[in-house]
Length: 190
Image (cartoon, rainbow, N blue to C red; front, side):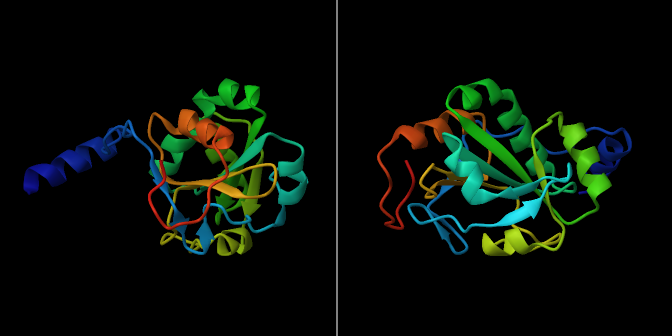
C-alpha cells in the first residue's frame, strides 16, 4: 500500500501520468442519462471561446455528422479522447464530420489553455453554467460523468454515445454514420 502511494506521489511530482494508457476498445452506450441512441439530440445554442454563436441545428445541417465532445480541464480521460479525435481529424473531415468541444465549468482562459494543451484548434463552446451539459444529462462540476462523446447525424438523431475513448474511436464513429439508423432497443451497441 505504501509503495503504491509513494509511486503515485513520485509520478505526480515528476509530472508523469500515473494512469494507464487508453484502452484499445472504446465503450459505446445505448443510453446516457436521458439520451438514447436513435432519438433526437437536444438542440442548444451557446458562445465559443472565440465569441461565435453556435447552434446545434445549424452545425449538423451543414456537415456529414457532428461529434459533441464534453470535456473539462481537470478530466484526464477527456484529454485522451480529444487526442484520439485529433489524430483521426483527417478521416473525420474526409467524411464531413465535425467535432465540437463543449468545455464544462472553469474560466474561458482555462478552457483556451486546455485546448492548447490538448493540441487542437477545434471550436470550443464554453458551457460555463452547465446548460448544455444539463440537456445532455451530465452533472456539472467534479462529479460530471465525463468524458461523453455524442455522435449526431445530419437529421439530428443520436447515432452513438461513448463514455470511454479507445484506439478504435474514430473508425467506430464513422462506421455508425454509414450503418442503418438505429432503433432504440436498450440493447448493446455493435
